[in-house]
Amino acid sequence: MKIKFICILLFVLSIYGLVKAQFKVDRYSINPKIGVYFGEYEGLIAGGEFNVTRKKYIYSFDYFRTFQIMSNERFNQMDLMIGKFIGEEIFRFQFQGGLGTFSGVNKSNEKFFTIGIPLKLGFKLIPAKFFSIGVDLQAHLNSKQSICMAMFSIEFGKLRN
Image 1 (cartoon, one colour):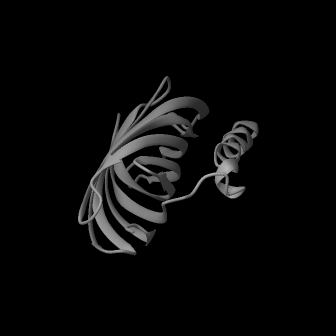
Image 2 (image 1 turned 30 degrees about the vertical axis):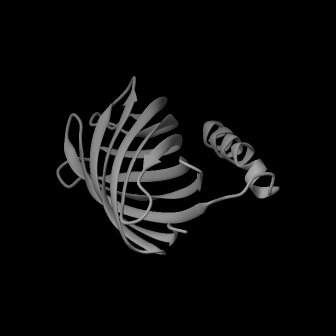
Image 3 (image 1 turned 90 degrees about the vertical axis):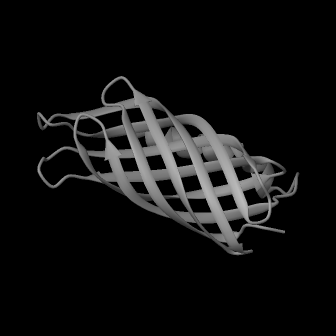
């Protein structure tokens, strides 16, 4: 629980300048996602992101939870990421990396918690200024249970100028 508080605190401190209006926020969005994950087992994953962009940089806070049908294995993932994006109008490609927490119950029914490195590649189609659809490929590298995810995303917010 202390690590979750520290991650949230770091995120708030990282965007403190945005809140104090020391530099202009270009775009912001909420991005729900659903997909599949691959690790020792496969399963479903759902969650979302909050994104803020400034010039060509994107800052994200995300939370995901996995669901298993054939196993009691389940994971929670919470990350802070920073990266860049290419494209402005109709298409956008983004790549990010950061630091995050990874916790849950493994196949032996043991609880665990670890810190990891999330990496993400995303492709978005932006048909309107406030809406996009896309595909994200994300990995969470850690010492307990590294996983890869493929997710469908819908994004709402200020996406284009």
